Amino acid sequence: MDYVMFVPGIDKEPKRYRAAIEQIQLEQDSGKSLHNPGAGNSLIDLNRAGMGLMEIITRPDFSSGEQSAAFVRELVMALRKLDVCDVRMFEGSLRVDANISVHRRGEPLGVRSEVKNLSSMKFVAKAVDFEIARQRELLKSGGTVINETRGFDFKTETTHAMRDKETWQDYRYMPEPNLPPLRLCNSSLGEQVDDCMVDIAVAQRDLPELPSARRVRFTDILQLTPAQATILVADDSLAELFDKTVVLTKVCTPPGLAILIINSLIRILNDSKKVVGPDEFLLRPADFATLADMLTEQRISRIIFERLLEMLCGVDGDLVVPEKVIEEKQWYQINDEAELGRLCDVAMERDPKSCEAVRKGKTKAVNILVGAVKVLSNDLANLKKTKVLMEKKLSNSA
Image: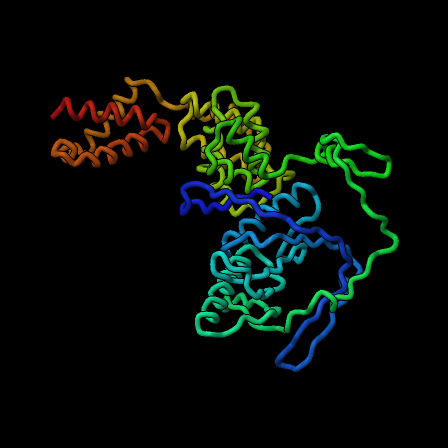
C-alpha cells in the first residue's frame, strides 16, 4: 500500500513510502481480558464476543513511530472510503498492535515485542518510538530483548510488560467448516474465469477512488503540489468539496482553489471548531465556486471572501446567497485608481509621521498607511494596488 508521511509546517514535501500487506484474515471477536495488577485479578469482557473483525498484517516495512502512524492514517482513509468500518479508533472500531524489533543493518531481524491495543495515531507513534529506544538501550547495555506482549501507558508515554508472547499454537486456530475456499482469478491477465471464482479485475473496477489514486490525480491532472494534494486528501470532506467545486469554477484554477481551501476554509472551520463529514458539509460547491471566481477576478477582496465564507459555513449558511449579500451591502472591491488615490491622500494627511518615516527609508511604515486605507474603505480597497499607489505618492512628495 502506498502512503505518505507529511507534517504541515515541518515537512516541505510529503515523503512517499510503500508497505507490503502480508495477510488479511477474518475472525470473530473472542472477548478481551481486563487485567488489574493492583487487585491481583483479571476480568473477562465478553460484550463483543462473536462480532466479526478483520486483521490486517503488514511486513516489517517501517523504521519509526511517525512512519508507522502515517501508514495507519492511510489505512484509516482507505477503510473509510471502502465503507469497511467507521474506523473510530477512540470507540474501538480499529486498534493497532505494533510489533517492534531492532537490528543492525545487514543482520537478521531482532527479537520482537508486541505493543497491544493502541487507540490513536499519536499513541502508535509514541509507543513505537519508545519501544525502539528501549530495545536499543537494552541491547547496548548487554541485555536481551524478550519476545513478549506489552501495554502502552498514554500518561507516561511508556510501554510495560504484560505477558510472555504466545506462540501460534497457543491461539488454537481452527478452520471454519461453513466457509468454502475463496478462489481468485484475474481476467485482465488473461486468466480463465469460472462461475465459482471471484474476478479481481471486476472487483477493482467497482472500487471507489482510493486516497493514493486521488493524490496522483490531484497532482498529475489538476496540477496541485504534492503538499496541497496530501492536505486535501487527508480530509475526505475537503477533498469531496474540492472535486465538486473545481468543475464549477470558470476562472479560478485548481491550484488556486486548493490554496483557498487550505489557507482560508480550514482556518475558518478550525476557528469555529466544526467537525463535519462529507455528507453533512454545509458549504455548497456552487457558492464556493462563485466566491472563488469573484476573488480571482478581483471583484471582491480577500477579507470579504473570507467574511462570506464564514457566513456560508455558519448556522444559517444554507440561507445565504453570496451574490445577493454582495449586492445588498455593496461589498464589491474598489479597484478604481482615482478612488484609491483619494483614500491614500486621506490616509497620508491623517498620518504625517508614517509618511515622514517612509521618506527616511523606513519602508515598512508604508504598511501602516495601507492599513489605514483598508479601514477607510471598510475592507473594500484593493490592497495591492493601494500599496503601489501609496509608494508612488510618497516618492513623488519626497
